[in-house]
Length: 292
Ligand SMILES: [Zn+2]
Image 1: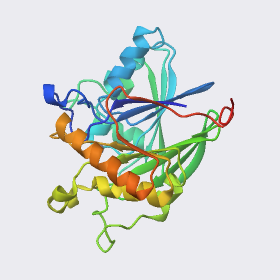
Image 2 (image 1 turned 45 degrees about the horizontal axis):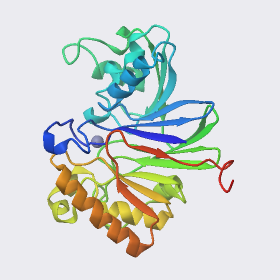
Image 3 (image 1 turned 135 degrees about the vertical axis):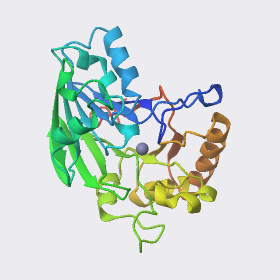
Image 4 (image 1 turned 90 degrees about the vertical axis):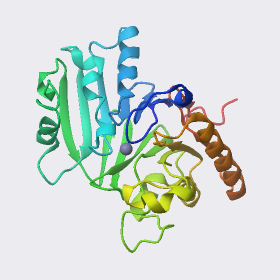
């Protein structure tokens, strides 16, 4: 399984020389595996660069893939109309996202993407988009198994786990310990364990430092320490710190990553890193594990 980070930034796209190493595009992570249609976590602005790579390699026309959408905030949906395969009549994108109280996702997206906010409606794109409302579900995508569970954030938000050939990745891009009154700050829900238990790679919100958190707990995001806590408690093999604050420059990111690695070593976690735009992580599938 090959994981490519096309966008790792939270809240808003950003651009400046001092942000260039980690990148300024918002949440979008691609999963590719042999004989398996591509699976994309979120439709942030990072989706555009994936679309460009498909065009440049002649794979935009006839594209068929699926999106697992965490929630509908701007930083997770803005890339949709700029995904080049959707400019081709032969492409199909299946979008699974959190069930909304104000109607099916097809209608909610039609309200989100329309004049005066945007000149084109979803059905105005050449390619076809199909929306599927999800909640606490388990369903197949090709030969992969997908699990979706509600996680704590401001507004309806799903986390996902994808398993393919014995390899697993969990994605909790926006998940905070400060969202529910009465929960202790180290509380991890049963649903989060359902997603993260023994996972090969956990991609987790890490927007705040401990020093920033009190002033921002109502934003719904979590601290780097909480991401480490979820990884350790769930037995995750690797942790990718994700959804970086748009004001966090590369130098500050490197300090956070170094501190997280020190902390991970003390806590017995195998590997922790801060995801950056363009980063590729290869996870060995069960058929090859142990082969000489
Ligand atoms: Zn976000």
